[in-house]
Image (tube, rainbow, N blue to C red):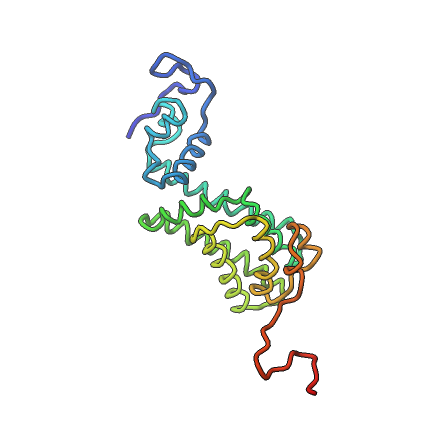
Length: 239
């Protein structure tokens, strides 16, 4: 284990005799580690590489972390905190209506600003061969599914029905990222009311649809049903 320096290297000259252009904090190293993880997986989260990316020497790292293991543990904590809290905050701001809560969550997923699917995917890849990362993913998935189950309860589903619908909705969204599906935003908006009906059993309320963005005329219309030979459409009479 490397001892931390008595003098903060953010204030003292580095080994080259030059002072850093700007102070580096613990958050800077975590952000650099996050970028490296997303770009190249956990194998890319190396002290020397991060130091080079930040334009500093290793001494700055050891002021903030005991070793790489501590950095990786902190990175998992950061992911758990920052990539789920925006979902909970969006739902809390939406009020008590289940449709408003779900719409707020969907908007966050589509915007991909407060929530980073790339960060999620990188941690899930890491979890395939690391027990600590796998445990963090399980905790986070349970936390998000509980959030969705509460929303489905608000929509009128109870017990196992709410839980299973929450799982289906969540697995659908995770699968979207896991399959690396890339669609234009407008297509995602057009498909949204259809997914909403399938996943919730309800049409998406018009006033909430407008908060997401413009959708096509087809997406605004009721679901269509194929009429099989010999079967009369509902509401028609035999002649």
